[in-house]
Length: 199
Image (cartoon, rainbow, N blue to C red):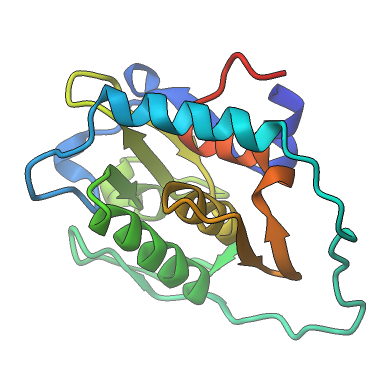
């Protein structure tokens, strides 16, 4: 799993290991009463197990080989928590990537899931340190009394995959076309913390 995590460019970690001050977090939080319970995580575990046993008989998607112009890098990022403007150029993310991920996380939140999107790594004032390659910090939990499962990820497709999984979809539109969730079990495990017993 660790090699997969490295391949995805993501890093998971327990909330107890994170030295992030919640009062300084730039977050998206669930404001309505928490409606998901442990039974919901059990339902999702069963769904993940079923997906892991599903064989995809179609042809694997192939990425386009044509030149794709790069988007402008994130410049003059304004922290929505403290209002500071940071003029650094981050090579690992763009403005539209952040906006896309924010939109997807808000969609997941609207389903009733307890999720948080923390962007404080992009603000030296809020994170209290300079980070060379900052990442978005995504947190999700399935009961009020559990710890958040935490993922460091700037990968839009991982969030799209998660959203479709939570809405009982079988596919999602990835960067290079339609992707089937039965081929993305490891991504779902990484984004949810579920399915630890799957091999």
